[in-house]
Image (cartoon, rainbow, N blue to C red; front, top):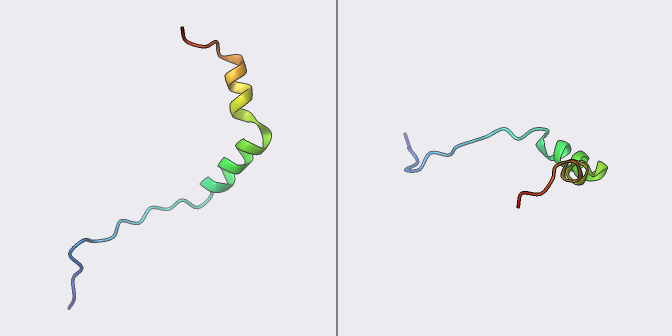
Length: 40
């Protein structure tokens, strides 16, 4: 039986791209940034 020297690590990302796209589309980051004062 063949064993790969570096086993693969698999992570499920399922819906993260959809969530990130929605956050970008509605401008959520900019809205949050506008509510939080900048750090001096």
